[in-house]
Image (cartoon, rainbow over all chains, first blue to last red; front, side, top):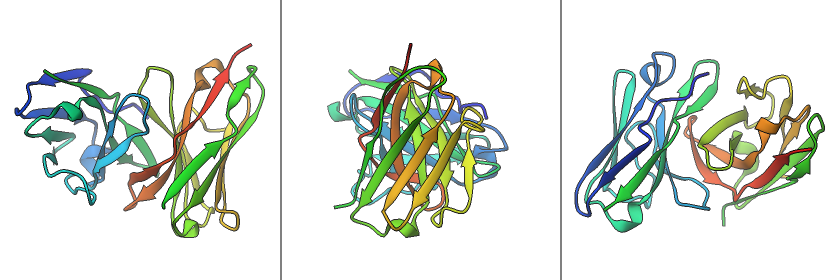
Length: 110
Length: 118
């Protein structure tokens, strides 16, 4: 049960787009279309922003989008805003009914 | 409104036990699988365990297997995590979270802090 691999940090200027990658294996990301993404502001609980690779829950901005290719999933945030500055985590269903999280990516909005 | 509230955290010595609780409200608890997820101070999220909606099937992370037990009382709208043989590395904020669409976590509680220290 190894954690999924995310970059430790990414940054972008307001209005720009950024991509956060999440790499796993054929036993998790590559084997199922069950990738989700979470936004976590300091001192707060995580918030679901993408599920089933690319679906957005009601109320989540369409500036957030997800995709997957092989064993790697990606979260794209377009039109960066100051309030997007947060930690982002990917998660995947894994074999034997377990779940995995990525190590997290700190997004800095310049 | 839909809500999860954890309790039961605290400071405990290594090797001792602790039971966490999570009370659900605002939704039909018996219809949902539930998870525990933890976050060590300054670290990332770590999935701990899941119980299915009826409480009959349970799965654990390797770090929890054999020491932790997840359970669900649908009559009390409450999720539990019994933690035995606690170690320093179990120190974390423990979140209760609801399963969404068989794979995601859509509702989270505020968490309850567990500190394992002598």
